[in-house]
Image (cartoon, rainbow, N blue to C red):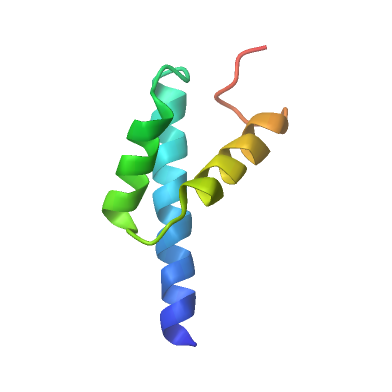
Length: 68
């Protein structure tokens, strides 16, 4: 159980790091590079999971890095 929690925390941190990179680059970064960077920190993350998380964040208007 603890291992699963630790994996979830590591995955969340990797996704957060990738999101910050995406924001710093104003979205001008290939998805393949985002996947590569997330998997460098958490190798078992499915690219579909990354895509879903980014779609969720992009659909929420309160995300601070988006310029309207």
